[in-house]
Amino acid sequence: MKLLSVGLSGTTQDIRERLQLDCKTLIKDGYRIAIDETNKGHYTFIGCNVMEGELSFRNYERIKNAVKHHVANMLAELIISREEKKIVYKIVEDNYYYFSAEERKIIYDNTLQLLNDNYGVVADFGFGTRSKNIVEKIAEYLNAHHELVLEGFINFRLKEYREKLARVVDTAVDDFMMELEYQEFIRVLRYFVTIQEPQVEEVHVVIINSGTYKILDEQGNLISNQKLENFVLENDDSINHEDLLITALITIAPYSVMVHVEDHNRATTKSLVDIIKNIFDGRFMICNGCDFCIKAYKEDLMPTH
Image (tube, rainbow, N blue to C red; front, side):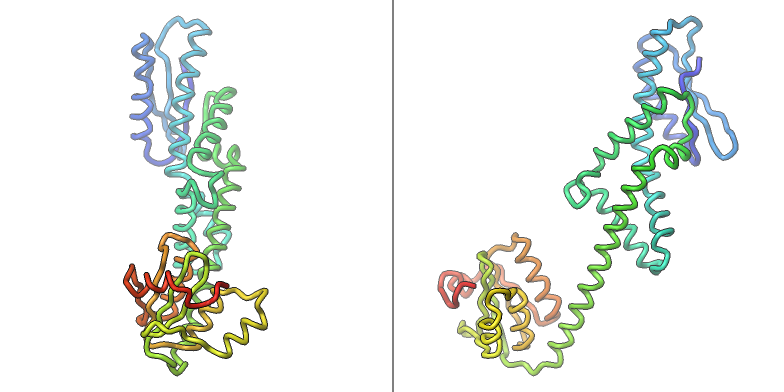
């Protein structure tokens, strides 16, 4: 007696083996479960049948529910591990065809990375959530149907899932565009540094946890710049002090920049250090702790911003 069948394209050996393994519990209960395969067009149908002459309706429903549970979990895992990549690839190719092949590859890879990050921008669409929702959809479908064609099910029954995947792709595109803008921003600033006449040989930037910083020369003296000080006075309420630091360094254009960081784990600190490193490429060094910066942390060498 047929319980259900699933139509798949491509290789089916691993699915069949997994289904046979999952059905061993029912075999132990005294029911003979047979798995067969039939080909119809481009699809291979894996059928699950119970080999029992007389079955009560109650036992039949119990066995079908057990098999349905195994099939729903197995197919949800298959959709996320294999079919999801195909869906994402198609979305990128169809919706963002105007990017180069290399750029589309970056967007595709970044989308998969976002989907694998359960704590990032798609935390509400993590693996567990996707799996749970798909299992529920498959189980609901198999309650009313004995046959499921995976490709058709994805196209017509998982519309919301595919729409959410498209939104994740959109997020990956936004991130990609922001990265391009950032790289152009860095390129321009790096150019300004190269055309500036260096005012000092060596600069030490001490970044404090409070969000303040100190710009010192190689003797540990504060470096002041009259133009920058006037700029701060005129814009004291709205000035972004990280921007001011970058502006100061570009104006001074030292031969080398040594950055001293009080806390390497702070996200804002890391972002600022990365910008300085990218602008002063080849002229940048970072200190992981020395007498110079420990003294600078303790001394009040400049007013708090």
